[in-house]
Image 1 (tube, helix red, strand yellow):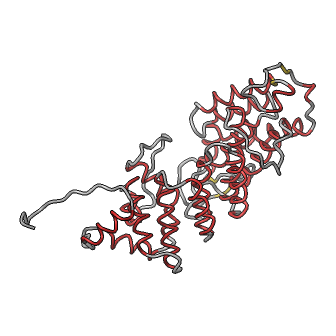
Image 2: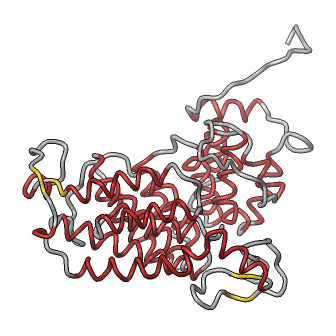
Image 3: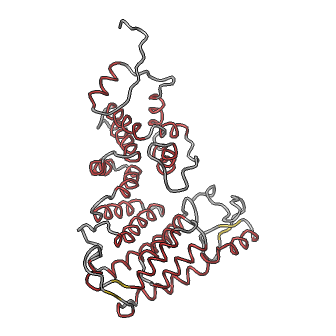
Length: 377
């Protein structure tokens, strides 16, 4: 994390910063800001959270099912382990507390306290450990610091350990897919979170390995991991990995479609594709969202994305979110930015009849408005 990215946790100043010597996760520019933030809730992150983690870890390592209450839940829409040993009531209660926490303000002490309440209720709660990982990763700093990312990796590792203690068939070397039933989602979320935390820790190869394992386990879907995984492949220069993912998922949304533009451009520069392949990918991407190229060309990487977690398909907010997440991939290739500028109609090439014929032959669906000045033509 560069010095320009560091800021006071309380007043957002970039000057005279010193790291909190207890948690070593946040920075302050003076004592007054540190005291104010402590009273506002940092005491939970700095003091209460480490103690709760230590206490819960002791119970994780000494876990025995006989210490908890179970009840029979049958064998439908449950995990293999639940069908065998029944539902753990403390785990169910912890999950309910986690659902309550999900509705609370991002990054708030109230939310973190609710998560710790769930952890105290059931120390092996995969959801609670996963939410601690998410808190470290996304809710203290944005973007996350290396220190927060490394703390998140540890929390996600514990979440995965707990899931596998409770479900012995979910071993590291498992290749059989799991369903996307509700009971599996906390485990999937932790695997996905771990991949992101590894990436932000600077371990992109480990992140890719984790992402591939998650996609293998998901019987349905997997696209949620496929989108960032595509980006990580592009960042590491692995065009074969991108090609394999796009064959699996297609280019059915904005992120996959613009990842394909990047892929085809890189292949073209290596003489493994022709410019028409890049054109075709761009036509498809523009159909999903026409705003992305203008934002990329403007190099406005600080544009605000949508904070409420929802972007309508094809909207400007969706384009801003895509560029916030993946704009740095485009910035690594200034020649691609120049190529995009040439494709703009203003001052650029006006499509010829041959261009339109190529489009029609390509099979890409597109809209066209024709105006005629020569009615005899």
